[in-house]
Image (cartoon, rainbow, N blue to C red):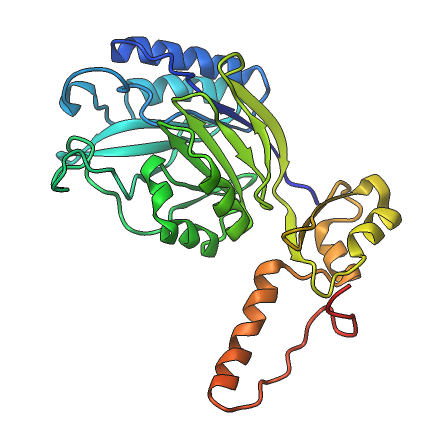
Length: 324
């Protein structure tokens, strides 16, 4: 059945204060605005507390829990929503660029520490003025509506960690950042068939679907964007699925949602009906995910390189023409 999450992303639109207290005040006001949308998840921008504030990390970092996560937790409880709260995190004598996941009860659900802090000096010996890199492993949080991963700002330049999140089953990846990010966010969503939600200190936070299409943005005059997202979806390759997108709509009408990207040869399907969940549609119409379709090729390639005949594979699309 559909797994709908009401997601709200935010942007600071460069409205940064001279102190951590002013930044906290402004961002909590933005969180209050986001909570008017009755969200299941609100994503706040990277290190909003310390941005533009002079001083060392010791002057600006907080523990978890701490004053800022406590303030976000209060709103999470009141509005029954998850909140992603990025801060400079002081922990065990080190500083981390972290995104704190706060659950609907105001409890800490998990913390992602930025794996790839950017260098502060030309010889690459100091990173973000003293940040420690987080563990080099995927972090996927099981929220009550789906599996959500996280990357932060400079992580955008390291494709391996985004691929790790896909392999770990992420259905959505949130990306708090200092800047907009642009095309790579679409690329990662497309490559790994998950939603990407950015939240930036600059102007344009974006929501990208698993086909790599932007479907919502913020700007300087509207610093939040809210959308209902169904995380029970499948992305299919067009091979062996010729005619199925229109057939699904013809058979099911509004009970199904189908989005087609013709140049890329992909389409996405989700169910709008509890009576015909996606699992039923997959069985009835022989839908196969893009990831599965590509993966089925690999053992055959290995066999052919070794001079062997590939083993036959049982597929849901047996008997259908490959192209059309």
